[in-house]
Length: 218
Image (cartoon, rainbow, N blue to C red; front, side):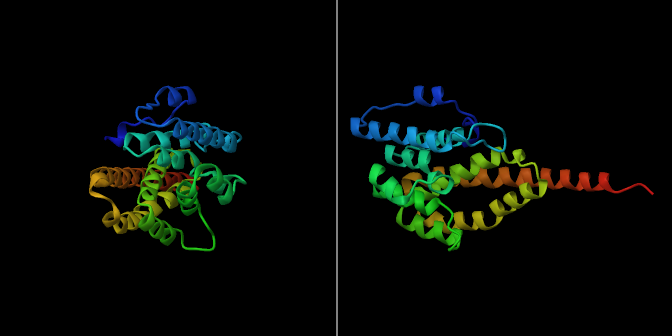
């Protein structure tokens, strides 16, 4: 698939209309819509810094995971990947309603100040390789809206992180990816790297120009 052609904005109406349920059980469909309701409810009062509704972000992540041929369970992870970090929903609640694998991946994706986040993701990917795809889609979508960060230095920090420790993580995880998903992994990795590189150059140039303009004329 060509990730760069995927929609960066997504309405709830489009997301629901775009579902395809051939071969999916009624139980899985029910869990999916329960996860969708949970995600929207958790993020209903949040806005993206780029100005859109926050829940659009999780719709995009879930939809791209579908396009990458991940099953309903992983699409549910896409919907819920931020709920532990951004709301008061606990690991136990996610496990109770959506199962152990979903809860484990969502917890591993959530930042924990007590541990090295990059190591946490790598160790998690050793157990559930799908985790790294959700994180890659999440990072790609954040990169498409990084100009929404008003602070240029914050933009630069995020972009440098993408080209530094995040890129190193992807290099380490490549050997964990099954052959059936490797081509998509490499394409997504390449897309993320080049997008971050282009945006970093542009943001550094903009910051430099702003600094020059701020120098008083003597």
